[in-house]
Length: 421
Image (cartoon, helix red, strand yellow):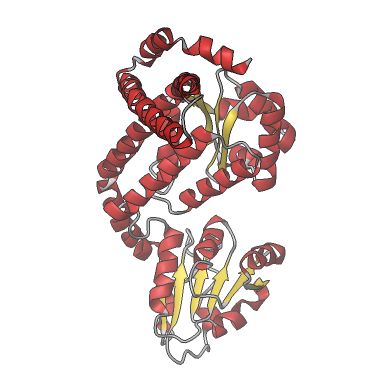
């Protein structure tokens, strides 16, 4: 079945953010695309992965359905077809390899990204919800999940913070270890601010207030994580209350300045984390007793160490992927011979039943039972060897000739037609 496995992929490598935004699929849209593919194609085992960095559609079919899938995306997202040129297609082992690399974080914009594994699991759940996950996809996904577990347990590929927003989250946790119920202020809800809030939502730091120039955006993000929100006019008041202030606002001049904070009394420490470029927190803020400022350079050192460690783990991750793909390929090849094995079992079982019927007419019940048990055992032993030969032939790529030989020896097709009448 692997030769029929196909992938259509659009990623941060092939498309600008404007295009990625245009065709990004949330759960509702992804499920609509599942339904479209089911209604207008014969594709099976469909997986739709859509994040801020990629939209990818995987499926099993004996023909290319990219035109139909692009049509479905256009209708669901109400957009023109300009996005098609940004897609790359894969098939067979190349498609399998790509899905492994995506799921394990090798193809992520931030190497080893922890979020992508969960996003792929969500995509798998959507496929199952729409009854589009067949035996092939089920086996492939569970092979990927097991490989991911090995990566976590056996390598350093997921260790440390490899993104600025994640490093800021770790720093905020470290700085507030000795503070009871610390208060966090997030200023700005651009991409980095949103990522920081996403990472923060997975911690025990739950006393969080979000401020933004456009208050509606702050409210929308705050509601997503059950945080508080407000407008930028509340900045000084909220800074005075907060233990950690994280700013990611854009602008040509700093938003948080020494003049703004002059007169602010800090009774222990107040930590300012500047995620902006240009900087949005004046370095001179540290002239206020108790104020400590961290900038991008401070965080970059932490992310560089993590990325170097992750890069050194790439060969080990690739080795795990190859082991998993080899195992999956063996299973996939055996799927090809599964119908032959089932037909052979049915043929031998029919022969066994016919012969038993001849000998048990005048037999006592206990004799008939022994004959039945003996014949079943004999059939299993006879069946063992052709099945082993078929599996060995799969690995050699010779399954078709062995299947044909078995069919001629046992007249499998003829017996199957006879049984079905």
